[in-house]
Image (cartoon, rainbow, N blue to C red; front, top):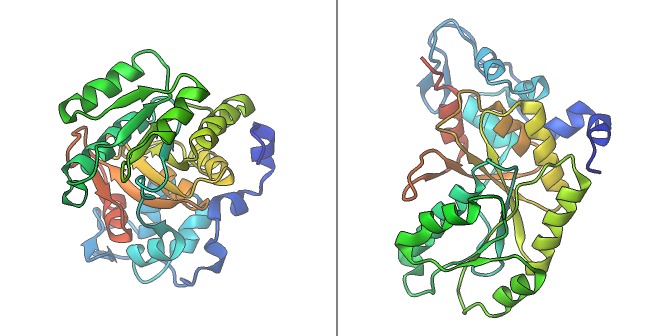
Length: 286
């Protein structure tokens, strides 16, 4: 995919939005009627709504609504989307990308805190954080978030600094990279981001905020998948009503890992599963 609106628009909507959903098996229509059990034993929030109604309210694209049809909403999500873990940052640096304001800096800070507090990493050196986002206040924000945990931060202002940081990491030390905010429709912006990713030899992961337009979310997800990203984190899930954009982006070939559901650094990341996402979809604002 080239970084231009015209190229994005030329991709067939069904192909771009559905990913591999054509190969999924659910064929029955969503259950309808009063008291429908839609997923993991959870009843619909309003008795006269169908599962389709709820998904349309979340702005889930119509091809995906049909692909999700099945025994339960959770079953449909498990068939259509991929759920899993983030890559191990102790083996390969893990870089978080997304638009400015997407919540990637907060997500990175939460993950860094998880490493510090995890029993599995108690004998490992603290994570090394490389800050490549040079927007006003970004470094100060990241420093403030990580200060209580004594996590080292390096400002990756040059390619030499980036390479040096990776070359001098301690054995077993996770490396987390906060990439600059980008616009997926800008070839220059995407190229600069990928230069940083390649310079540190990082695995790329998308941070996408809930509440975005589903078409926009799918464009972002597709652009990152085309550039080698395999995972994504859904941010700001506590601040959005409609979360259909998360599904649209993940359906472009990205594995859903965590949902950021709180401003708290500790415990602010929730592992996403088909059941968790189904429950979130069925929790409508009152």
